[in-house]
Structure formats: C-alpha cells, structure tokens
Length: 194
Image 1 (cartoon, rainbow, N blue to C red):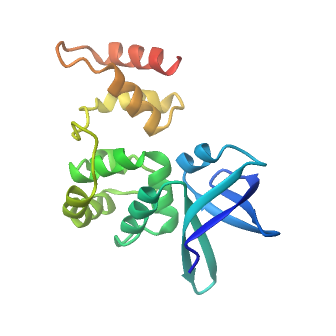
Image 2 (cartoon, helix red, strand yellow):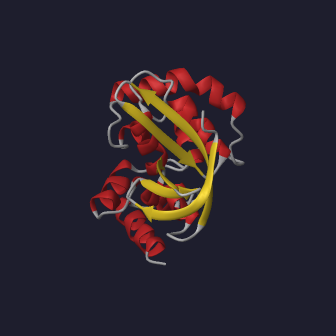
C-alpha cells in the first residue's frame, strides 16, 4: 500500500495532480481543497494517500490533511459512494461542512453535491452520523447556520459553488433580525466580491 507521496508537482488538472517521485510521475486524484493547498507546478508536495484497486486498474487518491483522508475512507464505505463520488463530496464542501451536514442529517445540502441523490444522502447520514459525531471534532457551535434554499440556489445559478455560496450566506446571517431572501443574496454577493 502507498501511504504517502512526496515530490515535485509536474502538472495540475481539474481533480488531479501529477507528482514526480524519483523520476516517476504519479497521477493522484485529489480534492479542490488539496489542489489549492499544494499551490502549482514546480512546488514540493506531500500527500497522504489511498490506493484504490479494482479489476481494470489502480487509482491513487491523495490529500494534504490526514483528516480529509480519514473522512474520504469513511465516505467510500457507504454503499453507493465510490472513490470518485467521495472525492466530489470533499471538493464541493469542506471536510467540516460535510461532517456537519451528515451529523445534523442535512440531506438537502448533501443532495446538492453532483452525483448524490436522496437515497445516498440518507444512507450516508444514517451510516456515518454516530461515528462522525463521536470521532470528529467540529468547530465550536458545530450546528450550521440555517441556509435559505432559495438564496443558496440563486447564488449557485450565478456560477458560485455550493461551498462558496454556503460560506457567503453563513457570513451574512443575522440572527437578531429577519432579512429577506433578496437582502441575503445581495449581502452574500457583496461578501463574495471582496
């Protein structure tokens, strides 16, 4: 098993890196968070990895953080979630946001991830909720801000990712006074424009 890889980044793709390790270029599929943390070509990178073996080939998945790899392994144990889907989940939401959604049974957030349907979202919540609640240390106030689906959908239709839209809406939530959907969208767009 390949537990980790360290080398120079030769190429960066949409969901993978090619890292030169001792003269051998390894293609490693990775999340958007890891792609951002690595930087770009020519940089030295170290990733913890998971080797997926199937009949027609081997695929290497790598992450900058141990906790992201741990969550990836838990996700792919759920029936209906393979390595590519697990990677998509970690690319759409941060590890903490994903854990928070699962622990709180927020199937609506999970179904917004491409490739995750209602049944898979429910299965992930059912199978992982207890384990993640016990083993994962969520930031203080681990309950997510209540998201307005209409505002979230509007921001996503403007081309923002689910993670960007959720982060912007969470930043503009005002628990003291009720604001309209239009005001939420406007404030979120100002937040995203910074």
